[in-house]
Amino acid sequence: QSALTQPRSVSGSPGQSVTISCTGTSSDVGGYTYVSWYQQHPGKAPKLMIYDVSKRPSGVPDRFSGSKSGNTASLIISGLQAEDEADYYCCSYAGNYIWVFGGGTKLTVL
Amino acid sequence: EVQLVESGGGLVQPGGSLRLSCAASGFTFSSYWMSWVRQAPGKGLEWVANIKQDGSEKYYVDSVKGRFTISRDNAQNSLYLQVNSLRAEDTAVYYCARHPDYGTSFDYWGQGTLVTVAS
View 1 (cartoon, rainbow over the protein chains, first blue to last red):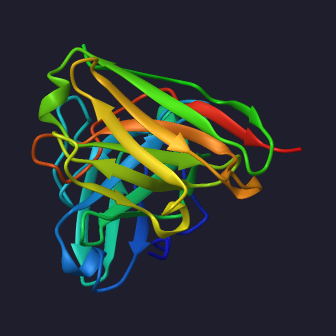
View 2: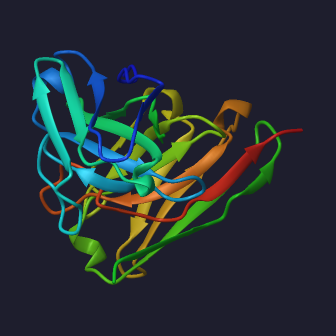
């Protein structure tokens, strides 16, 4: 039950695209298509942005997309906007009804 | 509108206990798996425990096994987390979160309740 590995921080200018990686193992990210991503603004609860690797819940802008290759999942945010500045967390199913999160990535919009 | 409202947090001494509650509304509570997720100050999210719709299955992260107990009362639309033998490293905001009907993520979260373990 080790945490997934995310970069501590990423940054980009408005209008640009950024990618946040999430690396696990064959027992979690690599073993299931159950990777989700959460956005968290300071002092707020997390918000679901992507589920099942690449699906978007209703209401989430299509600027947010997800993918996975092997043991690494990615969140791609295109057309960066100021309100995208937040912490982002990946999460993966790890079998036996257990879930594991990444350490989080702080996105700065320059 | 789906709402999850946690309560029961506070300051407790090491070795102490608390019972956290989560009041659910706006959906059929008895139809969903539920989880507790915590976040230590300035740190990342950590899944703590989850419970099946009827309470018959419960799962925990290794670090809380034997000390924390998740439960639910579907008649009261409430989720609980009994936290015993608390340690400083249990200091965190505790969120309740719903698993959607497809089960593979956490689609709604409460605002959290802060548990501080200190002498």
